[in-house]
Image (cartoon, helix red, strand yellow):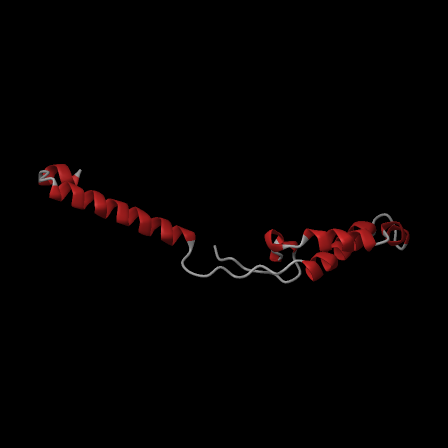
Length: 102
């Protein structure tokens, strides 16, 4: 499964690198009561989410696409290296070929 960043998504934002003091200040500056009065009860969740995303997008950096090999490839490489080290240890210790195969 490839990692894909969608621009208009909270998942595209890297909250680990966010400046939460700035984010908190921007959220406190919004007049949420006025925003709620501008639309119907059913429309408010969409307006709330859009407003929240716009604030977050202006204060939180976008995630970078991962570089390097995928995790499962690295896991297989580590497993191969462990098995090769085990095989070398067995051959150096003079183990019989029957013992090495099993």
